[in-house]
Amino acid sequence: MNKAQLVEAIADKLGGRQQAADAVDAVLDALVRAVVAGDRVSVTGFGSFEKVDRPARYARNPQTGERVRVKKTSVPRFRAGQGFKDLVSGSKKLPKNDIAVKKAPKGSLSGPPPTISKAAGKKAAAKKATGAAKKATGAAKKTTGAAKKTTAKKTTGAAKKTTTKKTTAKKSAAKTTTAAAKKTAAKKAPAKKATAKKAPAKKSTARKTTAKKATARKK
Image 1 (cartoon, rainbow, N blue to C red):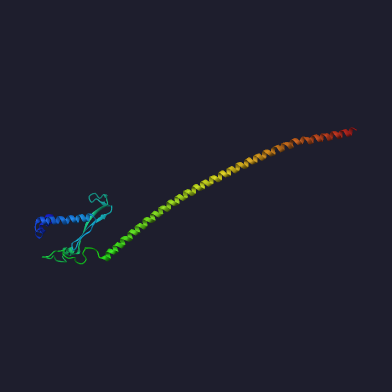
Image 2 (cartoon, rainbow, N blue to C red):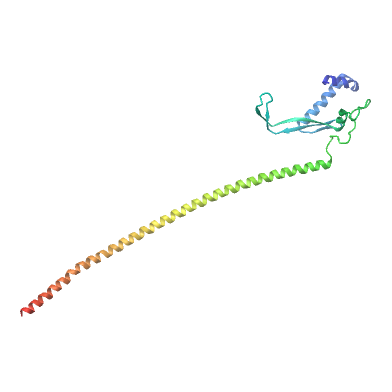
């Protein structure tokens, strides 16, 4: 059955073909607009229409077998209600003079029970909290790693500066000690020369003593 046949099927109940066509167009337009906006359209006993987001994934080209990446997209999805399923499977007979999906049987998809809805909400909240905790842990690890690297760089730089200062101080002290030693050596050197100069004076005294002894012998 196409759209034109659907209009013909309900034309007698709506008072004419034009009224039936307008009704079908209005229903389909409202249905499509609601699903595109992200709303879930549920018709009791018939089923529900909703928008489903599909993440990016890889698929196979059936003709070539090549692996192809499929982008993230959104698709409409229809879930048949339990009453519709029962009528199609034959477990329930179609009414002859009544609407097929007039009442909602038990287990229809008009909406999940409150208990199931609450449980689903709690699970979703728990997943979100877990994901947020993982992201926070990852951010903390990155921050700690960056802090460790910065501290290591600072410590290395400070150690290098301290070592350089100590080496410079040692060199300065060595230079000062060497200069002082040279000055002391320079002061002591003239004293030795003076002692060397005084030595000949002793020889002169010895000569005088010898001369005196020789004179005494002559007498």
